[in-house]
Image (tube, rainbow, N blue to C red; front, side, top):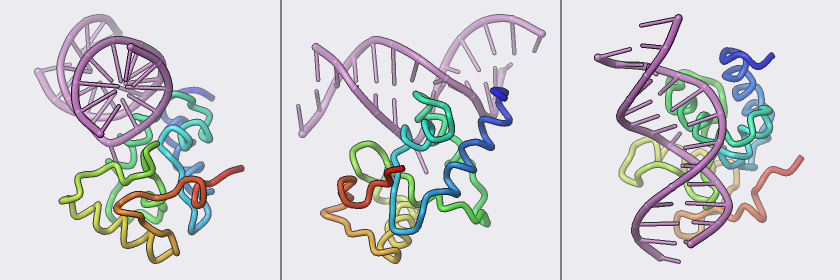
Length: 104
DNA sequence: CAGCAGGCGGCAC
DNA sequence: AGTGCCGCCTGCT
């Protein structure tokens, strides 16, 4: 345990455990994967996910409760749409972690 | 509210 | 095989 490959896998596994209608921050996801402080890693990996992935990458947002992508990005629109489809409400592009945050 | 520095991997040279 | 730069980040000034 601890090698790079398992870290990547850990992130994916942690992501799979996020239930619909809930969201986690990058840092939280990394922490759940056993990699505290590796928030950026989570972002990098999600960025590299193939389009055909089954992983709920859309449930990952930044610590500010916002989608960490340019609003003009196609991925932004899709992420927002998927979250709204799961019942997540946006307040001016912002999500309430207090309400939709995933707590173990 | 904006700006800067810090810690962790990934990828290119 | 080693070094360096960059990122869908964060927390603190």
